[in-house]
Length: 324
Length: 68
Image (cartoon, rainbow over all chains, first blue to last red):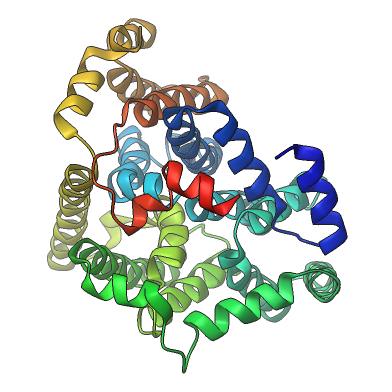
């Protein structure tokens, strides 16, 4: 398999999802699985860190104190399951790339070529991010403040539609929808997802996170927090999409739930706990603490299930020495 | 300080750089991102997969051979 063969085949078949093939070919040529597993998590957490640090950097320490900033960064690191990122391979990477594009687009309002490249990279990695892009376009058309931004959303939608008609996006999406969508059997994946204990717990945890996310967004809205209105509505829409996907024939909440998880630190940091009544504040902090603790323990449990955790811990504690 | 922590263990380095980022205004975010990339690449690299379930079939060598 040569790269030029894959590229020319992709051009002749009008295959948008060529990035995943190129990536897999590249790593299968290296004959070292560890390089691939390292690459997956590095891409995902780089995107996560980019979003959170870019967001937090804008605010002075008077607005968000040292403790709050540190808590926000660690919150995401603790709830996002490292093992899940590692084993789902293309989907978390696609989610992370789309998250960067969405953040640059909806929050920073940078609609340059780089944002479009991130949109394309994410879509090219995995078809599952298509509903997120559709949500982005719909939210942009309905809720944008200025006419210019509304027009941009419409243009993005038209570009996507033209690209979808002219390439294999439509046919792939149709295949996926008839396999996993409403009224289908859910395929072999649904059977696996229902029988696996780890999958069920993960989905339930994500369902809880989505509910918590919507609750936090409602609090931020009530307090007139600094979270951008369009951005907030978009996050609510995707959370609802994730909750709906939990009840679809094949539970797909790990796809969209993971996407929302990336943005949860941004929501949490906007909640002004001092302005909440004492009793409610205590309950909310307890809920967040339980979520973080469970998230961390769950990560360890999942890792224990799939990797040799003792040798992993040993490697981590020994640090660089063990790489030699 | 971060650098020393980083040399001892990558995880300590990550914790330390997050602390510094939250504390000091002048720390460039790209330093934090670079440290994150290095640390998580190292973490992913040290993983030895043991349990070959449906998730892992799609990730490890099996996927690379069947998909392509």
